[in-house]
Image (cartoon, rainbow, N blue to C red; front, side, top):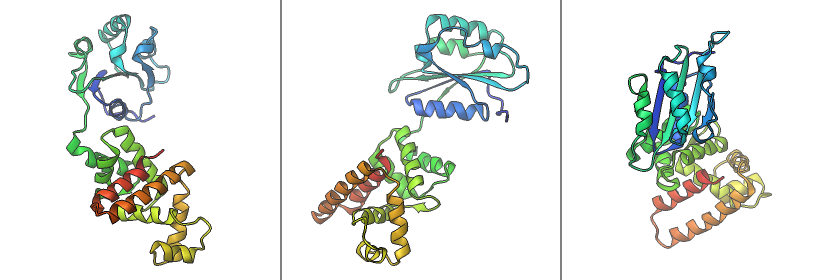
Length: 262
């Protein structure tokens, strides 16, 4: 097993978004797969595996999600454990806080002096860059303008944005995803399923039959209910454009419709 870069023996991560907290915890642990437990589900004895030396010398880790909900008994166990934490084990506490909230003081007191307290957040102005980074990590070739359109229309929820990137990667494997590419997909899907490729290409404004076949295959990767909803949104978008709505706004909505639907 690959050992991570040496994180502190205990790490308290706090912030507003549980998805970002868990991602930061896994990144800090590197290749070590932690045991996970929710704070409210703490039953006692969860630290025993960390405190007991490993027979094979492998690294061990415990990840506590929603650590704000830890009972008082857990705080006592943590204090005893952190008095002499083992060198080959790691404890990561994730504490979601409300908007503009602060980390729980009781946990901060436990961790300070032994480990590290770290805020985890992505600023609104940095979300598009974060989306691009997630796309690169997942092997998705996402254009910067598509990333910005996702943020503007899917919203600021990192978990939803991450899922949108994954869905785009499944629809366009190995291809660069931009707003024009997404619009082609919607055009093809709006046409009859049994239309011959040559006719499909002409109707969708494509130059080649192979483009029509590929786009049709990509459209099939969405569930039927998603595609039906998207078809309705294409019609609404067409009406909006004919009514004089700005094209960049309408296209951004179509991007979000493709990327955000489950």
